[in-house]
Length: 221
Image 1 (cartoon, rainbow, N blue to C red):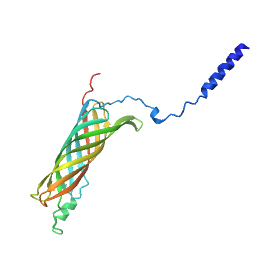
Image 2 (image 1 turned 30 degrees about the horizontal axis):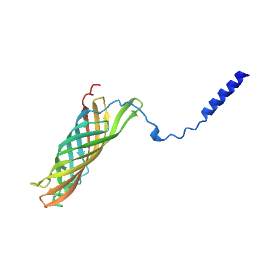
Image 3 (image 1 turned 180 degrees about the vertical axis):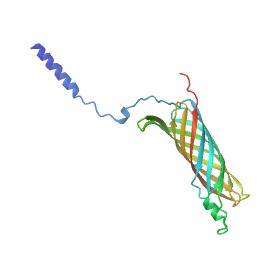
């Protein structure tokens, strides 16, 4: 009889514990801990990027960009981006200069730029590609500022050294611990003083770059 009473008391205690209301968990109460396979903290990154500015109405601009970034954490980095290129007149521009129209488009071609700024990388993730390979990548937002050098496409046209603001968004695809494929879309906004018209003009150089970057070795632990 005593053993039955003990069993009943134990069962009642367990049932009571099972029905205790602990409250509702919020998103802030749940933290996923995961070790990043390719960390960036305290590592420098240097890269070479091929670019294209395809959206100008009169010039088509291939360019080359060289980047240097220093990552203070997984989310933040500061860096330098230096580039050069040449705006080639497109079909519309050439057609306007034929005898039929006889008009030289008043356009400026990109020659060079130097920008400094910061990157914020809030997302690090991985994806399965074709069920055969897992690719790690991050997504970052960039804010840079500096100067751009351009020249009028009109023969003997003037140069313009323009203050530039450059927002951008990009992604690194990690090819290994120290190598990435980096894709970036950015929009350089230039404030140009054009000598031919003695006026200030806003111009956008929107473009995309694709390049390879190399990260320095990890700091010893």
